Amino acid sequence: MFYHLLQLLKNHEIININPFQYITVRCAAAGMMSLLISWAIGGRVIAVLRLLKAGQPIRTVSIKGAPDLAEMHGKKAGTPTMGGVLIIFCVLVSSLFWCNLLNPMIWLLVFVTLGFGTIGFLDDYLKITKKKADGLAGRYKILGQLLLGLFVGAYLYLYGNHSGGTDGVKAVSYQFTDGSYHSPVFSGYGYMLFPFFKWLYPYIGVFFVLFVIVVFVGASNAVNLTDGLDGLCIGITAVVTAAFTVVAYLASNAKYADYLMIPYVPRADEIVVFMGALFGACLGFLWYNAYPADMFMGDTGSLTLGGVIATVAVICKQEFLLAIIGGMYVIECLSVILQVASYKLTKRRIFLMAPIHHHFEKKGMTEAKIIARFWIVSILFCLIGLSTLKLR
Image (cartoon, rainbow, N blue to C red; front, top):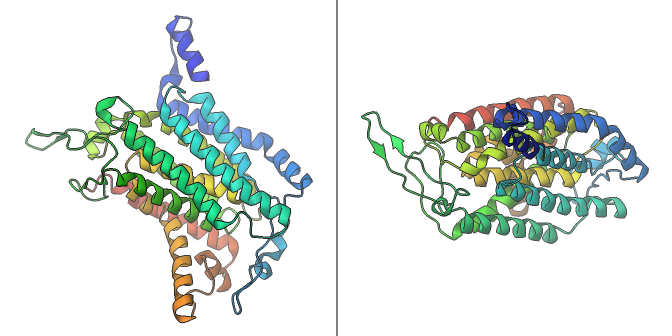
């Protein structure tokens, strides 16, 4: 809204200079605004959640011989949860204030934020009211994620053809050292791109929609599984958000996209501002979620964060890059898959407890040390992921 007001004033020559026309300036402003809003109302949100008795129930052991999470984290029972509403509020207010609202990708991100936020909110609400760690039935959560992925995938596939406008994605003309150019070989979202490879982009057509659904379900649940220690998930997500802010900025600039040989996405410019708002909201929530946590994000926050990051990766055509930059999410998710598969097939467990952050807890490592080390590894994954943009 503020962006449009300043543009109106500049167009009518009421002001001569508008520094907020620049993406980088508005990205920083959106991040600071999210952070300040979080600081301003975070304490009140915690107070309201305590008043509503929105305390976090701790899952008790249900399988013979399995480690008991209630025994490990019993002291955390009753800590206000559903704090993801703070993240969502800060992101939406800040992004709607600083973004160009005529950009359809912003509204797509708003839709995803509210959609995943609703699924997570229902799950947290049922956990609180039933006083049990089991909230919304898994099949309903998966169904909601499938429908959101279906909508986003179908929208991009049907309206993301660059030849029909500026909403889509296209390959730029690559210039070789001899001065010759390689003409664009694809347009639209019906292609898959792979890190490290310049010319590998198989056409999958309508199956792109199915691919998006897989990305959505995988990313949202992987982030959800990572949310098991104070500040762990939100810290990793802040790092991943910063990395994808850079990715979106590069994808939105034809010159940088040409240089790096990555898809050029004209409408990704405002995504940079949205991600700036998300980064500030992550830092603001970390203020209250750092060990020992005053508030948990719950599924309201974790599912939303996973959904938003997945959407940005899909829009920028960097879905496989998400698996590298979000390497810690992948490790957490794989540890659960391997643990469950091993137990069902052999009745033996690979890890002392899954997700893997609990494995290190059972080995005697302090929670604070696990969190810090996982953050460091996440930064390493982000650096590797960003380096692949050039190593092609």
